[in-house]
Image (spheres, one colour):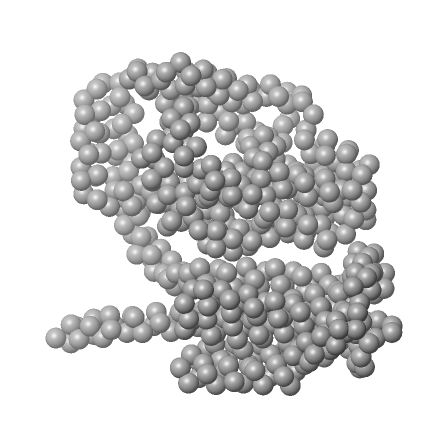
Length: 549
């Protein structure tokens, strides 16, 4: 007898169940005359392929992860390129439909665990590549999507009515699908394209995808890194976990769908009438009667008993919808936090981090190639805007404006973020002790990492966001983009004047955005909970009054 890993047997069982369901549906539709020749061929090929896989016919083929490991073992530093390209192509070109994306990322983590590449840089690269691939797939969906689906979708039973249902679903649950679907192979490969074709706004797609891609990249890179000495075991455990996760999510979706559908009395009446008809058939009754009695005697009483408790817990742990604004802030926090961590570790390794050394040298070469007297004067003027006194003055004015309009939370976020940026910049400088570049154009004291000017420059973005609510859409865009350009100019002026390395200003910018996003998320959460409490107070008062009466 051949022993097979649980993950493999689970995948084979899933394939067998899928083949059986497909077979039943195909026979049902064939008897109703709904299958044309093309659909018959697709059904036969699909059922046969799933059946062969379930029977283990493909077990002797080379495993993708082993092939990837052999290739990565000879590539060394080029593993970055291999893993990044595969992470991009998985959704950008739908390679994920035929190849397990997790395997490539895990193999990259294994190579990092063996000391060939840097795990922190790998996570960032995979994160960016996965997000870029999803964005390309989203673009294709937006450009080709609906018309392409309507024209060619009927071959696989995709009608315009079903597209309308998909569009409605993506409008209500698209964000959760993008986030959770990143960990389910088939959903990961198709969700970005479907999101684009279903008219989901990119500004709504982007924050969910940034968070999902970041979690996915971090989890699977670290999985390979931690278990770098036993690749086969970690692949087996990963396949098992992904399989269980997929089945769990699928079960939840089906249960929620059934609950929502059968809340309607007319739907329950239809099912009851159908079951009554089936019980009149001698052979069908042998299956229907036990199932129906089990549901009536066991399942429904259990749901009725635990339903109120589960509903109470769900409302406590999910206090309403925080909305897209909160998700966007969390996406900014995730990217900024990772960037700060990466460059902080590089600063602690100073001057031995090869990637950061090359980055800083390249930045200084560019600066020297464009240096001129008028740029020197302009850089000295711009850099003054990033000093703490100037940034603090603008922040005080903006905070006073927000206080006058009773937007206390926004004022507090700006002030606290700036003050804490000043404090943490000083602490981190004394911790890392990175020396400043030689031959600076202006005088500057203290250690280099992170750049305080770059951290303070983020406050201009916060000011623009706080002011944009009173303007039209064009002015909103101009204000925010202008603030971002100004902050970037302040940060880069520090590199141009040779008082900071490029890694210093990137770290400082990441610190500023991390603090701003963290306190903005905290303010949104507090405001949301307060609003919910106010909404529940009238209900409690009405309930108390009726009890007294």
